[in-house]
Length: 377
Figure 1 (cartoon, one colour):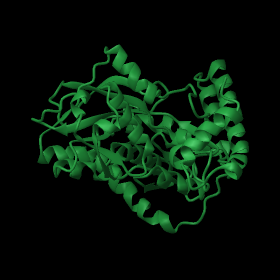
Figure 2 (cartoon, rainbow, N blue to C red; figure 1 turned 45 degrees about the horizontal axis):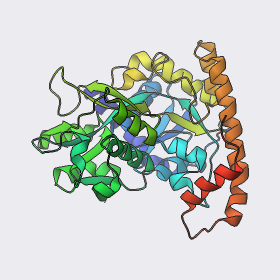
Figure 3 (cartoon, one colour; figure 1 turned 60 degrees about the vertical axis):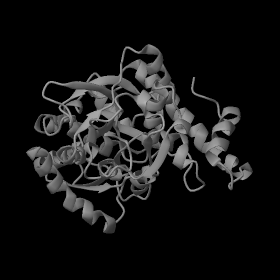
């Protein structure tokens, strides 16, 4: 925890300065990690932020580079600085997929499908937490309970929907409570919600544990039908174990959702910036691998190296190729995803011309793509 605190303190000052910085040159060609860069991610109390801050702190100390981190609880808030060239990289939730496809919050005239690329792909465990000594021990116990609906965060809401699907429930079976992502621990402590959903090692959850007894909802990875139901809602999710989190005794483990929380950028970012960013994560990994409970998942042996729903950046592909981590299958999938993104972005203006902009653009775009955009092979 001391290492985490050191990283947070070092990076936070840069986060506070970001709002006034000039636009960055995403196309800059570099021959080493950039002297100055800016990244975005979730709020400072989250494990997602702690991971990124630990990596940034190590890279900064070793290279002398300035890395500024801007935080936001919302999907659009994390990607807007990239689109506005105030930041280069973002560690995201599922908004990297939603933005690429123009779905959810990005089904909006100001957004639409975005030309984003994956730069690095560490994974992390997430789960539903509740207060101890309640009647809520499994997702099946959520019926009629107060469940958070996270403001402007379709990624987290999708994962909660997947938990409900595991239990054979929907949002109609629970009492949704609108709350910001970072407000969940206080809301659980104060009794406004009955469960919360976060990456399991967030510092705010350890603080919550010091105030109230907490526990994790049980998931059974061998409950095949239930796991298949949740993966129909959130295909990228695997059910897997975690330990050392708040509410767990030494050696105790629970099962949660494990999936990538990637570092993403726009396609216009130069190949050299993406390459040296990937290289820095790998080169500096031994120095920050033990900084948090999940930074051990940040090296070439643990990251995801197969494109699934968003293509990898050419700079990252070059680095993976040099290290024997890029296959012909990955290349073919990447090319198919790039072509699919081009088709969606070309179709978006035509869609807007005929769309009812006062109606539900998310559903209209989803249906329109079925008939007008050639799907992925």
